[in-house]
Length: 201
Ligand SMILES: Cc1cc2nc3c(=O)[nH]c(=O)nc-3n(C[C@H](O)[C@H](O)[C@H](O)COP(=O)(O)O)c2cc1C
Image (cartoon, rainbow, N blue to C red; front, side, top):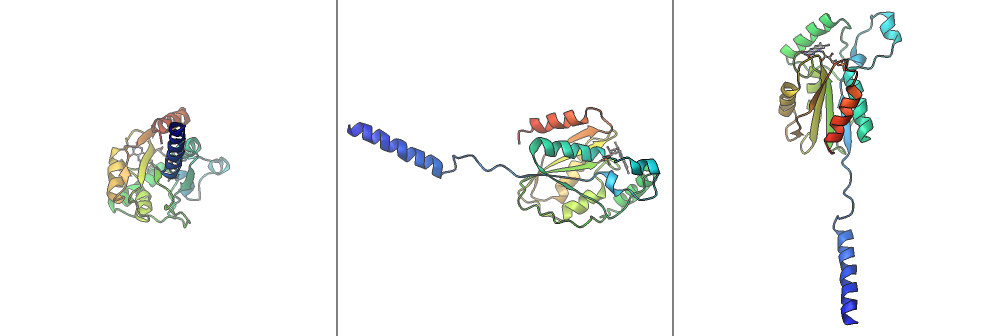
């Protein structure tokens, strides 16, 4: 009889110990997908067809899939700088920005990173690395203790150069290897989804 009481007591004590020491489900990490994609930053004066057709940028599409897969919040980085639609002209401006280490402006937003522990950071490759507006964005926030997961879309250039730039501009953050996806890729959504699922966040 005494022994049974002891076991019962121990079980009860164990249960209360478990419930009181965080063995209950850990709070889920809050995730943000922040991205820049050219579509919303092109200047006026383009042709009527382009205006009539909603244009979703490649990086915007990758961001949408990441957010949907992880039920994450999304933030679009929109420049106050307007870039020309013509690739050659955009390319020339982007080159100047890169060579002068410019910090193009960002449209005002109420974004706070306080509640996010993981930030996916997406951009198109411009001149072999991240567009300078990504540097503007990084310089606006404190990154200590956060995990940044870079992703990009490009014609052919991979992500390591951009990743190492991001590491310099986000001191104290863990910057994961990240992933590059090919431009105009019919399998973009499925490739992005399987990458994100494989991260086991
Ligand atoms: C100004 C500019 C510079 C670019 N530079 C590169 C480059 O150096 N290497 C590359 O592979 N792709 C380059 N691209 C192609 C873009 O990275 C690619 O088309 C990307 O998917 C566009 O993404 P978005 O639609 O989200 O803006 C460049 C595009 C632009 C507009």
